[in-house]
Length: 46
Image (cartoon, rainbow, N blue to C red):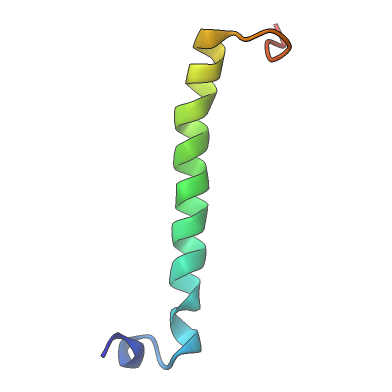
């Protein structure tokens, strides 16, 4: 059913690309502040 909305089997692949990009961005936003707070040896650039 969903395949018809995206115009075929291959038409829905862009959805996974968007999800992957959003996942990476969310992980980066979550990890960067944590890594700064932890300030582990070798990771601090300041």
